[in-house]
Image 1 (tube, protein in one colour):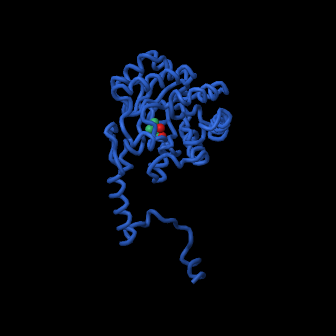
Image 2: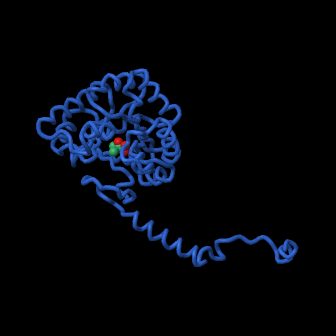
Image 3: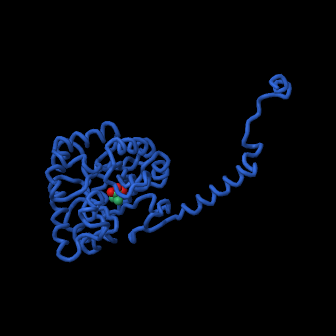
Length: 276
Ligand code: KIV
């Protein structure tokens, strides 16, 4: 598969070809996504919830993100790889944002970074883009500021739609090459996707975005704390894995596993006798 670039995503929007994106946090998942031909992988800070078991993404650190970006880059050479900047890593100053975004590319070796926020981070987005780093915006429901929003709720309903549109326009003006729209009404996501030239990637934003992203653990049934309405579960692996683990547990207890075929030979009876 040819490497997917930021320009390729733009070409896909221009041609009307939808963009597929999923989250990935490790080498094995990245290899599977590569084989499936997924266009783009996001190492999302959602790993704080799906991998680390936290209730939110807020505590995520730069080190944790870089740790997870590296194996995804190794496992998936073709998709566009995007690293998610954690809460507190880009809001203090342009210098801080450029420094941390640069670390993602130099240490993590991803292709682009994503950060949350609209008009309030536009100057920061511009500074990072001016430093030569491709930026994905993320507006609507922004999980890093979920406390401020009063919970995981649909954003941009009624008169609040104006703000979400203004956020999208501000990010496009600032030089973002793509925008994630999370949990906004479908008709608003459609209007934004038509109004801006860069691709929109929806999650809980309906059918008309230029692409879609889902959290791997949600779509595969590996995270059972809650399942948002917008998730389509393509597999329900959790119960299957539990069944397999129960069988393994029982077989270890009973001695049914391992069988002779799972072991190694290499010491003769005579050699063993000497050891006894
Ligand atoms: O962290 C994440 O996985 C995300 C997606 C939900 C877009 O930001």
